[in-house]
Image (cartoon, rainbow, N blue to C red; front, side):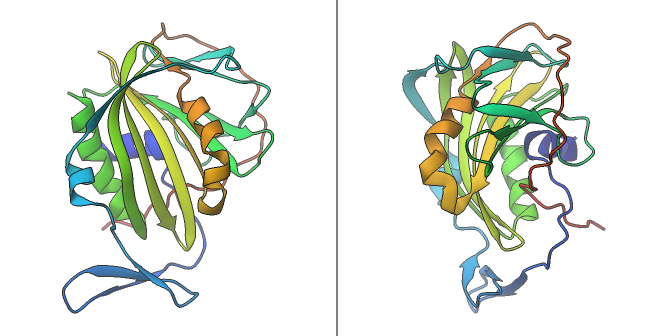
Length: 237
């Protein structure tokens, strides 16, 4: 079940570039060594941030420009997005868990995913506890920046933001996770780290489109252009 959850939320699949070298410091901490001679601790997350989920009392709503509704085919969830800013593309990798993938029209370095799965997750905290360790194992570098409960469009979601390095490439992620009686839905965006601050607002607007709605059977045209991989799947024995 765990592998399906991680796949459906963040698309873990192979990326054929040279792996980074990892080492252990004298005090037992794991570091990753990059080709440019720099290094980072594999996990730089603050312990309190990893262990706790805060509550944001602000009420969030979708942007006025997000007018196009897409429904999940699996559970009672969906999202609104701005069709002038985003185009639907072919989902990266071969997976049944991602229902839609997007590329930003004005900045081709911003990508987004919507996925869902019918699986009995008990709580949003339980989903976080399953999700984060698996991401850490599959990233060369990981730092959880924020995890908090939010009310978006009248529903409770888990909002997470984190940084990860995958085979020498720094990415920044924003995601909203929503639970229903049937399963869960994830709407997430990601971009290269050096593009994040300039595009954070656009990314937040996208993930804030998540809503509760009856599942549907939307038929959409897929534009065949693949976004780059947000995560790498390591071989397991």
